[in-house]
Length: 350
Ligand code: NAD
Ligand code: DAU
Image 1 (spheres, rainbow, N blue to C red):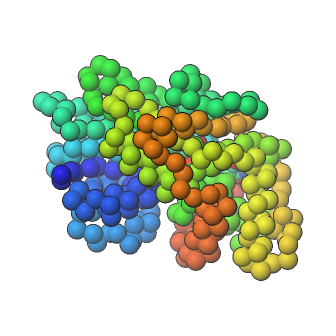
Image 2: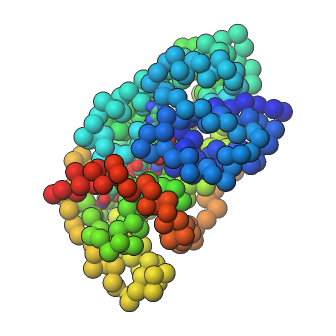
């Protein structure tokens, strides 16, 4: 069966892994990567597949409804996998409106384009919205987020993602649009932009710079290797029940401080530095406002219904990730030049 699928945000971290998976696994599909190439979008992430005959790149901003409609008119897609977003919580605290434009209005523009194109017949059509566990708010020391957990977002980022989820459900309930959603925990792996915890720490360890841990470092996240998230999206896009959401997580909780210490240990070994060298770089800094204490996902539904489970252990995934950054210093140098420096100085000034 041939399909045309628009993947938004395909030049970003997770999107590039989803595009690669679909382009290589489904040569009979045409994959259209729709991306505005913001600071987080990088076509270098897709160098290995960019000349594949079933891959097309379209530079467009999802905030621009006319531009979105033009891409839909041109390719007449059967499916949409929507990852384009402003994705960094700290940036949402300084510039919330950017998150409203891209994450809320951009999502509604895509929903409208799909509804308009598919209005005569929804058969074989699918709109997959890629969301986050942060919509559920924060957990205490125990418990897990399930698909039934009430939405309770705290940051402007998670509020914008929760809002976009509500619009996706509204288009399903009101217009019958065939949607599926995934709500995933923290991803890590190759091509992760170094404003986020793991790649930022790897970058700073390489350069012997302070390792800024927010607050007391006891905040807890559930980490999943990015390729396992891409595999989950593949399954839900093809086999998920219309109108439903699936939680995706790594069964892998780490307090930030313990994770940073593990990274220091693995990197000292790989860089052949004496044990304990990198840990001395750990610096506790001002906390993130409204910092969610703990996220933990119950991924039982996608496991039971679709047979998904993570394929890599955290130690393996982290080791592969560090190796990728050490082997791709040029990538890291490119993305940390220019605007990155200005962002870093402002974010970590105090
Ligand atoms: P990212 O910031 O690395 O990439 C975002 C991509 O979207 C970039 O290529 C960027 O150019 C593009 N983009 C941004 N604004 C755009 C616009 N207005 N129009 C078109 N393209 C635009 O993000 P990521 O970490 O890969 O996250 C991808 C998706 O997955 C997001 O929706 C995010 O909310 C969700 N998610 C991320 C994580 C995580 O741990 N990173 C976990 C769960 C869910
Ligand atoms: O849970 C899924 C979410 O995970 C995604 O929806 C987001 O797009 C993604 O960015 C991520 O959000 P987090 O806020 O959890 O990720 P981040 O890497 O920014 O931070 C992880 C933890 O590390 C968090 O508790 C804050 C802390 N932290 C982060 C940075 C950047 C630090 O202690 N120091 C830092 O310098």
